[in-house]
Amino acid sequence: MKLQSSITGIIIVSFTTLFLSAQPKYAAAQVDTIRLKDHRLNTATLKPGMRQYLVYFQMPKSSKTLRFWLWLRDTKIETRNGERVFATTQHWYGGDTMSYRTGYSVNRVKDFSPVYHTETIAGKVGAYNWGNAQIKGADTVAQNTKKDFALNFTSPNFNWNLDIETFEMLPLAAGKTFAINFYDAGFGKPEYIIYKVTGSEVIGTLDNQRVDCWKLVNESENNGNHYTQTFWISKKGHEFLKEEDSFGGGYRYKVKMPGMAVNILPRFAGK
Image (cartoon, rainbow, N blue to C red; front, side):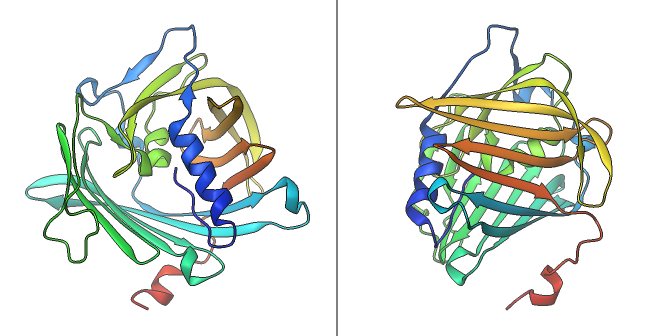
């Protein structure tokens, strides 16, 4: 969910702030609330493995340029304290070292409830122990800038940094509307974000496949400005294949790379 760029820092930070603070439009139709206790996420559809996404921005004042990133998200199923968990590692690569960031998240396999989350942005570490009633800075992590952070919850929530993985587990169908209690660790408070299935569309992928997808849309208003996020998730494989965000005349896109794309992570791991 969060964005960052050393080239257009002010624009990107503003976009992040606007999306986090914007109030979602609640549809008049029946809303399916995605809560941990209801087990409505189908965790069996979240397939372990490496996912790579080409991410790029196009801004109205720079119509002849594109700003590119490559995002890697690697999900594994592991055992932690005798419990099966998803362990998701993220690497974000941009045009310079300040664009690079990492993330690591642990979620229970049974319901995708967050257990732990850490991210390093511009060299600063933020690490959290995450429970159903509270999120708290992990005091055992070295140089954790969030070690004194603590926030109590009125209800359990989901990790907004893993929105892609969450969407792949939703029971998508025509006419469905979902309210997901997301929280972006260390920022603000949890809030229910509304996502509506607006229809379906067959899209072309980078490996020349034609895939029938559900279109999942979030619309928000902030200070009179309109923001739209559209996500394409395949009907058959529950794959997050594409995202288009529009904000203030600008656009951000995420496109999933095909499986044949070279995995750059092992080549540079540890450097």
